[in-house]
Length: 462
Image (cartoon, rainbow, N blue to C red; front, side, top):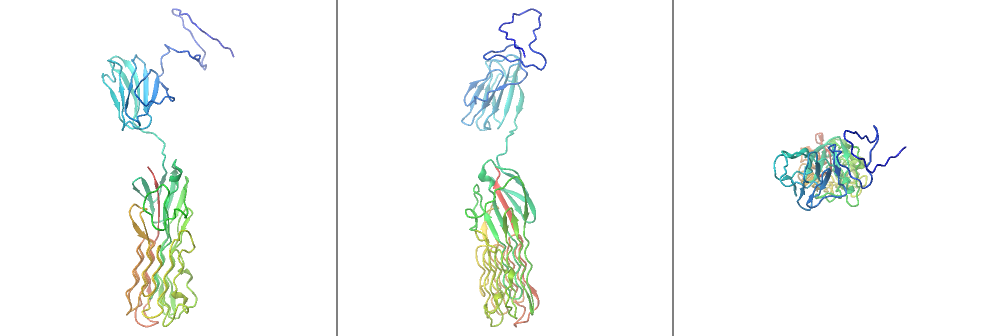
């Protein structure tokens, strides 16, 4: 490798001086300057000198103008043909605090001797001095604000917004897909509500169905009013990553049935799932059985427990365990996902008990209302979900029990069926009333079906 240092080249008329060969790089020495080479339409960006106050631009330079602290002016240099100057909105604040660009003396901008004001967010401009007629011409003007997205981005379900938060609501199976994470770690901990399917109510003055398990977590970056079952702190947080999350929304259980000598309890609700969060289906409402079975109905336990069925003539719960309501919060989680079912009346007026709700136990017979659900504003307005079903009644007895707030179905009166739990609330179905007097009479009647569940995911998106 050879090296030639030249201090002075004497001008020669008509002589061509060639520096370097094809593929070589010609470099000026430290402190040296160049003239006469012209420019290629590029600028040298002044990254070490962000402009925050009025300044005068120089030919061949590009500037980052920070107007976040207030508007100011960029004075253009005295232009000659081929001069070039660029500027860009450094903090995306031109729309709030404008940058004024001023020509030198009587020179022009686009053929007019007047200032130009940049007022568009994220704007970048490049000016080339053409001639004295047009002066500085804007040859490149970008009004697009191409910036990285600092917020979490996802898709799936029915998407709505509430202020700066996006809400994904799933009323059936689906996929929550995260495609971009927030640059703020706390914003990747999403808020969620996972409600399982409610259980069916029992038949023939049977117990109300238990509500589906209710689990909620309010993320640390969120601001809505959560339910009393909010798991922050103490519950299970979900920190999302860029991946697809399958969503399961549990269906409601079918109603129980009674034919003399053959009692079938209400069907248990189905689980709902998001990531590591599983809410358990509600426990089935128990159907009365005049033969006083000594084996408890096992599927009365669940997110909330099913209400006990009428114990039988002159019988007490110790004789007929099916008069006892099922256990809620089964399997156990923190905070509890539901409550126990009530205990059925053991004598006149033969009332089934209420199913448990998210925040309250089911009522014992004869005060056999369903347990209350939980109210949250995770979807943008307060809504109650996961109410227990009311217990069924008997002719000559009290009316069927009211369903718990949050979609619980009402219990049936004498000769009427229990009401189904409301869809996508996880409400338990109501127990059915008896068809006619007598310990072993009555037409076959089904309890009300449980309501399906719901999954809601919420996060800051802007």
